[in-house]
Length: 236
Image 1 (cartoon, rainbow, N blue to C red):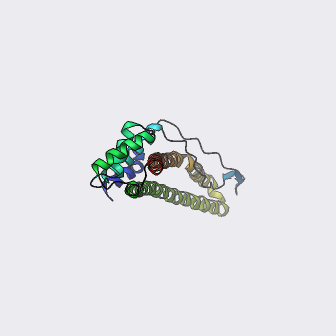
Image 2: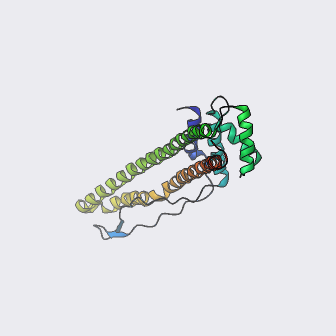
Image 3: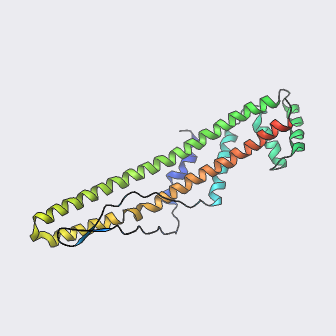
């Protein structure tokens, strides 16, 4: 993995070291069902979708700047769409027809071969590089989420098996009911708390995936704005 992809993927890798003070919402108490001894036992919790609030604007801005840095590193030799974009955005974040015309006149001085087709073709290169970086970043987040799901499922399966085994022992060994139900209670407590244990991690991953999408769209919109202006205001 190249350096810029590693940097972007790092927003997911380091998430365990950047906890906030926010407390996860406690998992709801599962419904109760009768057990052999007349007491109640919790049913197995199911995976619930994680709804993450939007990430902070600072985090989105940081991702947007990372995407811009990638485009800077991918800048091709000579004057092309990238330099043309810089010329425009330095004068206005919402360039007008006059901005486009002035920038185009300057572009032709720097690159006599510069025309609408040339600028749009080079814009396609940068859009492709942006998409690659975006997909790599989201993929890193999805892989982290899949690994976390696998860890949760493994622990949940183990706890379910232990609970089932304890229930079988209770039905056969009435004399050991007291000791077995103590162990059962401990395992059920862990099982009932499985959602709360993992929820904050899922929320953080989802925040970062959403932030990545927002950041990518911000940069893509900048490119689309310039492309639109080129098509409208620069003749081929």
